[in-house]
Image 1 (tube, helix red, strand yellow):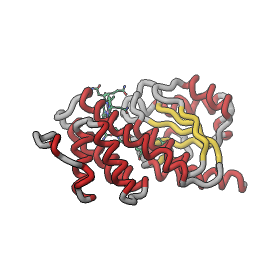
Image 2 (cartoon, helix red, strand yellow; image 1 turned 90 degrees about the vertical axis):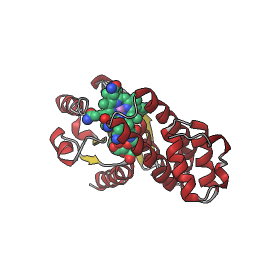
Image 3 (spheres, protein in one colour; image 1 turned 45 degrees about the horizontal axis):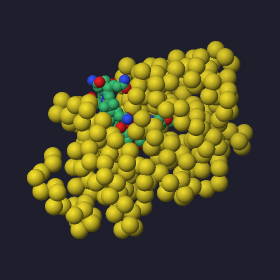
Image 4 (tube, rainbow, N blue to C red; image 1 turned 180 degrees about the horizontal axis):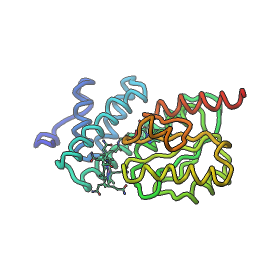
Length: 231
Ligand code: B1M
């Protein structure tokens, strides 16, 4: 998608719509510095952090995902795109956290065993922090033991699990079954999410809720914690 004129382009001179389109191209091309610059420009122009996130960054990654699926982009290019996306996210993260209210609860979150996708999980972390949660992020490739140890250690209100592969999403059931076996399942609200999941899957594995995106995770998490405290 890069063209020969890229060097001459001054991002700050572009109107909003062209800048956002350019950021989609820059994300596609894995240009981290340009993504960081574009993110700052939009914020300086008064765009709310969540709008920059969804319209410039997440939408750009959606386009990358389509071409990855269609065999036009390959793992190394997608890794660069992910790295650029993380550059933009790191600027937005503190802003989202600032908008949050008082601490409302604690969450442990991690991507399941065998799965190294973490952008969506990181977004959920950011939105939960923005909603006032303390979040302990276990990172990627978590085994049952990793989750159980973290639950024991941090005693959160919520356990969140992320999976992006159809081959790794069944592992969520392995974790929940282990919680049942230990008699601790009902001590926690369990939320699951990731692109290949849906509501039925969430029910089938025994989660409290499936969250289609980071905003749903923060609203569902907040509502369920409040319900639990009220009960
Ligand atoms: Co991967 N990959 N990938 N990949 N990758 C997908 C998931 C895929 C759909 C691409 C495709 O074919 N179209 C496909 C999976 C197919 C399937 O299983 N049906 C795929 C594949 C096949 C693979 C490999 C097997 C490729 C290979 O090696 N041949 C390999 C597997 C590695 C592994 O994990 N073992 C692989 C590797 C990679 C990279 C390393 C290159 C890179 C990951 C980099 C990183 O994460 N640090 C990568 C990427 C970037 C993608 C795509 C393109 C983008 C994922 C993403 O970040 N989306 C993805 C295509 C796609 O999803 N369309 C793809 C943006 C993000 C904001 O959305 O993650 O959906 P998402 O998160 C959302 C919601 O789902 C939800 O909220 C988030 C924010 O709104 N959510 C939660 C997510 N987790 C949640 C947890 C919650 C709640 C909500 O807890 C409460």
